[in-house]
Amino acid sequence: MYRNILVPIDGSDTASRGLEEAIRLAKALGSQIRLVHVVNERAGVPADLVGIDLRSVVEDQRHRGEELLAAARDRARKEPIEVNTLLIEVWGGRAGALIAQHAKDWPAELIVCGTHGRRGIARLLMGSDAEEIVRQSPVPVLLVRGVAAK
Image (cartoon, rainbow, N blue to C red; front, top):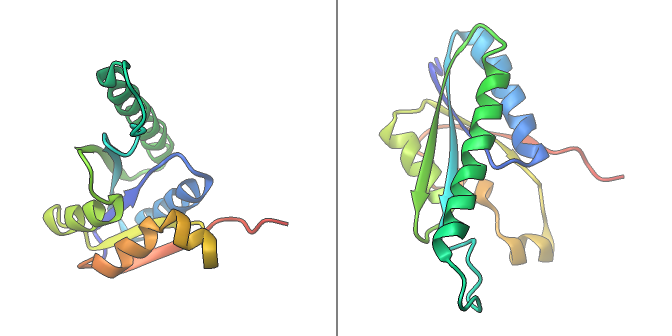
């Protein structure tokens, strides 16, 4: 049951909470964790940039993603669980859809991810990777809410 747990990492507090929950599950179930970060090379490049070396922007995104994965991997390795990482690089597309597709390809048996729990106009404007994962995932998804603002 849930031998392969996929955990998307984006550097947010909610992703960290999702990682902590995935670690607890992996320890209890004897599961392995795969940490995934998506570098969307198009998403980080504003349309009005002219005269800038786009390769350096993409390289910065890649470097940041590798740092996030390394920190999350180091945290998970403090426990007696198996953990590996994957940096997915893509030009365009939605991170949630890519994560759901990777869950199928790996094959994951569970996705554990943090969610901001946005509603209303904030959700409409910012979108929701967690919602996209839930809609497209071929496996169960455990959403871990962030700490509510006071």
